[in-house]
Image (cartoon, rainbow over all chains, first blue to last red; front, side, top):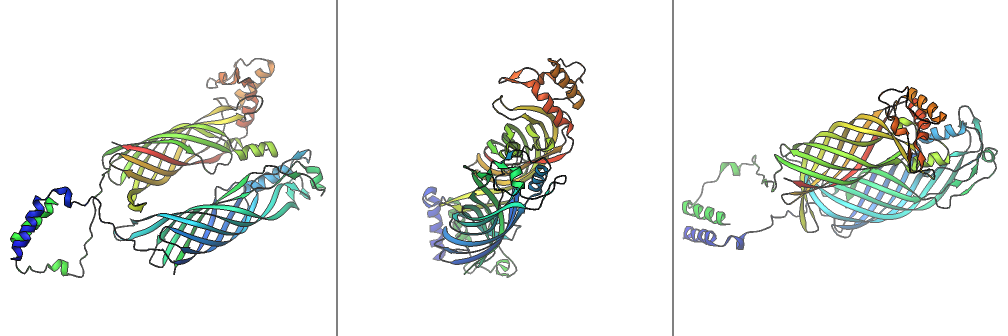
Length: 252
Length: 286
C-alpha cells in the first residue's frame, strides 16, 4: 500500500508543471556566528602606510555593542608611537646646510599621533564564507565604520630650528616642538574572520583625519636667534593617516 | 522537479519493504559534502576589463592617474593570463613635491621623480579562493585574485612645473622594465558581467642619464647653443631629440628646459619607484 502511494506521488510529481514546484533560490544556510545583541571587546595593532614625513604604530583597545547582525557601535582608546621618517630628517638637514637667509614656510602633515579616543557606528551588511583548503571554511563579516573623537598630537618642525649645532652637518639642538588636542574624524573598512562563536580575527584599513596647523613666513635668522617669528597658516588643510590594523575580538 | 518525480517513481517501484542499511552512510568515518557547481564557469573564456580611472595612492614626489583595458584569458577555473596595457594620462609633481619646492626650495632627486607614461604588462592570474556572501537580501559570488608579472613602459620626468610662465613641460626618460604584483576581488554578475576591485603596484627602477635621448654632454652643447641664441643641434648624438627643446609651448620657450634637463641628467643616483593604484573595473566575459 505504501509503495502504491509513493508511486502515485512520484507520478504526480512527474506530471506537475516544473515551475510550480521548482525553487528558484538555492537553500540559504543560517548564520553560524550571529553577533546581534552581544557585547564585544577587541585589541588591535596598527601600522601606518603611505608614510611621507611621519610614521605611526598603534595599539588600541575597543568595546562594542551590536544592536543586530548588521549594525553596532563601539568606542576605542588608542596609544601610538610616531616619529619622523628618514625623508623628513633629510629635508631638515639639507635646509640647515643652507645659509639662514630669508623666510620659509613650515611643512604640512608633520603632526604625530600620540593617543586617541574614538567612538563610532559600524555597518556590516556583508556576511559570507570562503574556504581555505577543502575542509577549512572561514565565516566572515565585512563592515564600514564611521566615527570621530579626539587625538593628542605632537609636532617637531623640520624647518624652524632655534639652535643650530652644526651648519656643515645640518644638525639642530632645538627644533620647534608643539603639542595640542584636536578633533579627529575616522573611517574604516574592516573584516571579522570568525574563529568560533566567541572570537574573530579583525583586519582593518582605517583612515584618521585631523586639521593641520603650522607656521608660515618664518624668518630663519630670527628663529635661529631664538626670537618668535612666523604666523599660523590661514588655510592649513587636513592630515590623513592611513593605518592597517590587525587584532582579535571577543564576543560575550 | 520532473526529474525528482521520476526518481521517486523509480525508487517506489523497486523499493524493498525493508531496505538494507548502507554500510558507508552508517559508518562514523564517512562524511558527505554537498558541492554546488559553479553557475558560471570561467575556464577557456575571455574577459575584457575596463579600468577607466585608476588613482595612485601613497604618492610621494609625483601623482599619476591612469586608465587600462585589460584582457584576461581564463585557462582553467583557477588560472588565467592577463595582458594589461595602461596609459598614464595625468602625471605631475605631487602636492608634497610642490610644497618642498615652494617652501624650503628643495627638489626631489631626478631618479625619484620619474613617471610612467604608457606601457603594458603580462601576468599569470590565480584565483585561490572563491566564496559567496549574503548582502542586502541577495547572494554575491566572488573570487580572490592574485597576480604578478612584468612588462615595459615608457617613462618621463617633469622639467618645469606649471606656473605663470607657462604649462608644465616634460622630457622623455626612455623605456623601462616594469614588474607588477596585485590582489583584488572579482565579482560575477550573471554569465557575462564582472566587477573587479584590485590594488596593483607597478614597480620600476633606474637612473636618469638621458632626457629626450640627450646625455649630459649633448645637453651641455645644446645649452651653449641656446645661450648663443639658436639651438641648432649641431654636434650632438643622433639619438638626441633636439626638436623637443625647440619652439614654444603655451608661450614658454622650450629652450629654457635644456639647462633643467642637463642638471637632472647629471645628478646620478638610482631609485626604485612604486605606482600603487586602486583599480576599479567593469568587465565583460565572452
